[in-house]
Image (tube, rainbow, N blue to C red; front, top):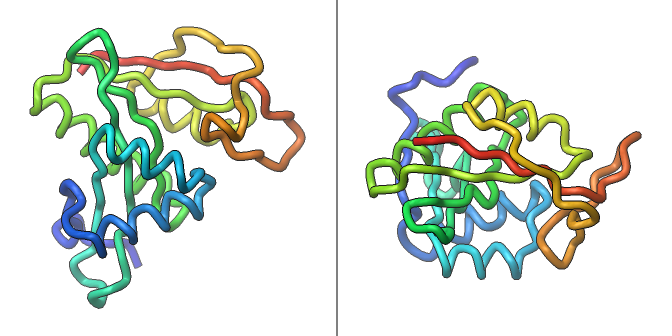
Length: 163
């Protein structure tokens, strides 16, 4: 059964319990825990919660955004939803972009591994456009998970969009 739009609450993560729940969700979707914590310390952690769920279930979506030089640019470092629901993921990304726009950002950048076709498609559906490739940069030390599939993950593709 689809969620009613009014049951979803988007906001900056508040409190240790909500932060840990968001970090667990991001780690389950391939995030490197140490890097996730570092990114949260440098930027903002956002969560999407379903108000109809019992307390303690944690967020249904999470995202980390960090500032980038030049000023007024942010990087959408990572995002995940509990389910593989594309519409929910688009809602999460859209809410994040609205929040950073409201705080003064005018441009967002994001990246995807060359093997992560789902993420590339989602970023483009969210209005991002491809800008360039960073060869041999999709390594675990930089936060990239090994994806299983027919395509070997080794390059990072960068996208941006005005806000």
